[in-house]
Length: 171
Image (cartoon, rainbow, N blue to C red):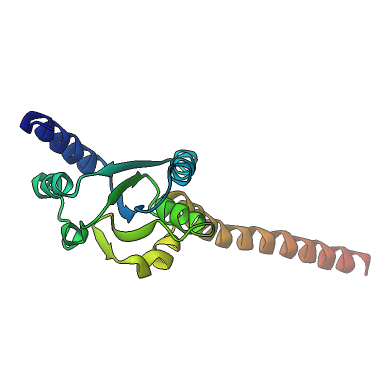
């Protein structure tokens, strides 16, 4: 790879890092071609972009980026796959479901909305992160709950009041 090609790759990686708020680093070394192909298919279906990158180029792109990646450049050893997603827990769910059949991929680290997670033991924590849509749904449900209670109270109270008036009018 020539120097110009490396600079182009670094610029592309820097742009991808700037555009994405969810970045996962995983180790997929040791997977055969068929298993890697299955992982790529599963990533495509889960709306996760998967790319294998050179550690030195990724480290330089992280350095050139405006974001603060903290300890993530230190985990760039061995083979590294880069996963981008819109959902914070998308790649974590993909890794967890894929590990039911295989012992790989291993999570090296993740960068989600300014938060940094290092190590494979963080996988369960990352799976439990709620997506933006899930959070909006919960908030809407919480906001609707008091209104539903007031409406049901008025309906039942109105029925009681009508029943009392009817009883009084019959006397």
